[in-house]
Amino acid sequence: MPPRIRLASVPLRRPAATQGPISGIEYVCRQCRNASLAAAPAQIDTVTVASPISRHPPTQPPSHKPPEFRKSQLHRQYQSMLSSSPLMLVFQHNNLKAVEWTGIRRELAAALRKVDEEMAKAGNDAYMGSSMKLQIVQTGILASAMRIVEFWNPKFDAASDGSVPSVHGLSKKAYHAARKNKDLQHGLEPLLSGPLAVLTFPSVSPQHLKAALSILAPSKEFPAPKRKANPAYHEPQIQAGLQKLMLLAARVEGKVFDSEGTKWIGSISGGIDGLRAQLVAMLSGVGAGITTTLEAASKSLYLTMESRKSVLEEEQKGGESKE
Image 1 (tube, rainbow, N blue to C red):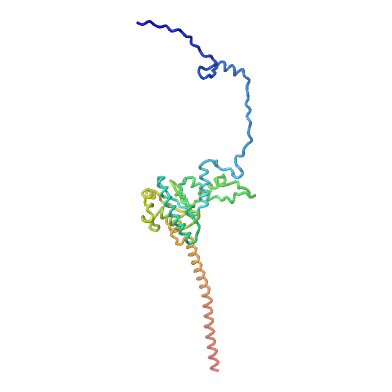
Image 2 (image 1 turned 135 degrees about the vertical axis):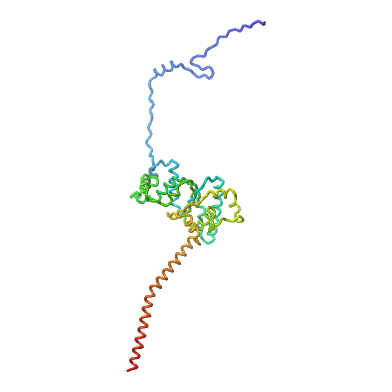
């Protein structure tokens, strides 16, 4: 058995209480720390109060709900959309994928671009196709914005001195005015439920409406483009998306039309110009009929007097011949 080697005992050095063993961080015992805190004089931090900042700038009146919320921004956006869109189509969508939405929007933009080109050749430079927008909306917020646009008039609440009015679409007055007129209906109440998408038009154009219906809701009156003319329209993803899209109604100049009424507006030949020509022809026909009716009485009276005059002249001539 090998002899044991005795090692010299090296005394272990305990680190000082005020110095860390490795990093040099000072450690103080709890009693010393409490004693030092008790002995130190109390220091009072002086906090400088800044001047109060105006919560609402002069160009932005206070809102009924905080304007930084996303719902408030959507509410304001929907109010602007409803006020500036005289023609709007309402669709119901059922779980459309992003790829399907992209293809449908692409084909719709191409069809509207063709209508703009045809109208430009005829001398009409109003390019509406680029301003039309197909978007998914929040149904509850759209219903609230619809009531405010329909049943609240900001003219009655405007400031009398010409300054910025204290009320707007998100104000308390607009909110209470919309809730006060619960008995009034705008016609879209039964449809404002479930997932909805809207297509907005900057003006009423039957030509653009016809092109949009032929892409989004094809029928016998508005047939879809042929495969040879537009093969991209017949892709499986676009056709699958169109099967999940259904036309519900249209809002034209504040009035609600069903699908049949919407198709009637799109079937107006010549668009607004053709409708104006038909109106002028109808008014001219009515004017001619009224003129003929008024002249008939005078003509009949004139003929009666002339016939009576001729009879009297013949009687007078007969009496002279006898004498």
